[in-house]
Length: 337
Image 1 (spheres, rainbow, N blue to C red):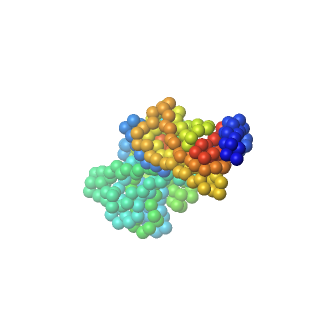
Image 2: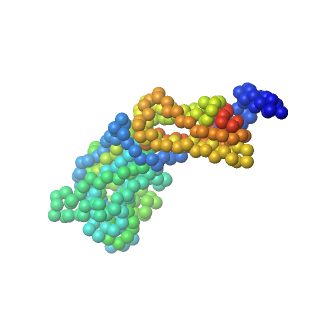
Image 3: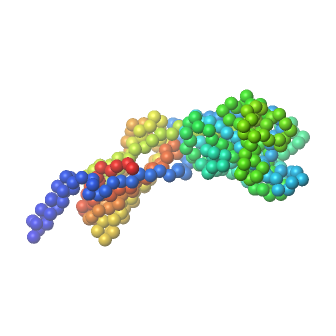
């Protein structure tokens, strides 16, 4: 009886090394946005786009101090990044002394689209308006962004707003000269962002004009910072003791602050439930592999899920099936869908 059992095990090993991935099915590959912050001097944050010249009166964000108590202004500035990961935005702003709600900056691909990222600063961390000061007490205020991955050369928007609440408003410095930042321009909305128009330098504030007009565009005072992105591939040892996951930096810059998670679940009676995860602070340089071992023990088919992302790598998740035979695991060649 013991010899028969040994032969069964040997037969299972031979079978696992000869059958194809079709027995276990195809893998599934997906991507979601990353929210891990972490920078390294190996891929330093750098100033990307900016417009820091001031000309003309600053523009109001928030409840507009006018006879129409319902008027609330939103401002936006378009920009074209050369860095793939936006990490920080700075705006040259100050607040009305009675401002009570945070100043918010959204990053969007379209003015009326979804937010790719958002950041806010409380009013107590922003200078109050001082009309006796030639600069009105304006200052550069930083808005840290949980990594927003952008397409280089495409147009994006910084959308500034605050709550439409009485006496709650801020001012944002501008340069009403279209030559100040040729890659973008300023926009304004008086209906909570439902419609936007280009802001004109040629008429007194708050005059606006249609988007079809091409002359006299304004630019807000802003700075964007970013880092370069890279890619991490996921590979596996197809058969062996424990699950061996191999992460490889296939890009051209270091991957920084790498988080990974490997899950193996299932097996006979669902008794297999193993997770290996971690955060690597040491940068992973291009064309260098990182190997992770996940111990397994049990018998039967299992579900395998691997997730990896970094401060400059979009989060990716791979799901597929394998087979565990005691302390050994077989991983079919999976297919990215």
